[in-house]
Image 1 (cartoon, rainbow, N blue to C red):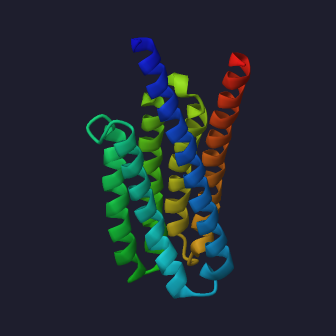
Image 2: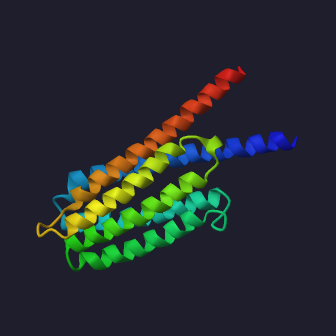
Length: 193
């Protein structure tokens, strides 16, 4: 009886992660499309998109943490919520100064949130699978953050497309994780049939 309850709880958590990863991928794709389609031609829309991106990350991490046992059990995600909220405020302030400042803020955020994402992926039970993609995503995010900081120090002003490429890669990692979990579930069902 207890094993069955554990299996059901695990299956429910894995279904949540699949949905969560698909949602994260979809929102990122929409953001990237908006950044390339209209963000390049309108400073106001670009600014809005740059503020929304870390704010969405904060909301998504909060939602996942709450669905995965709460903030006390998911300290890396709790920290990621705070880091992303602070980044949202810093982006608003940075937009009043220069895009170089904004890209520097995104660089620091990419490093911190990437390392926290990596920590979350390592902490999740291995039985969920697909966490290798989240580990890679977190590591890549931290590396990209360093690159953003270097770019921000350059005299040429960056644009939203600098961040859009980063967001596109993140979307790919979330999609890979969602598909990996989906295929794993299909295989388990086929084995039981």
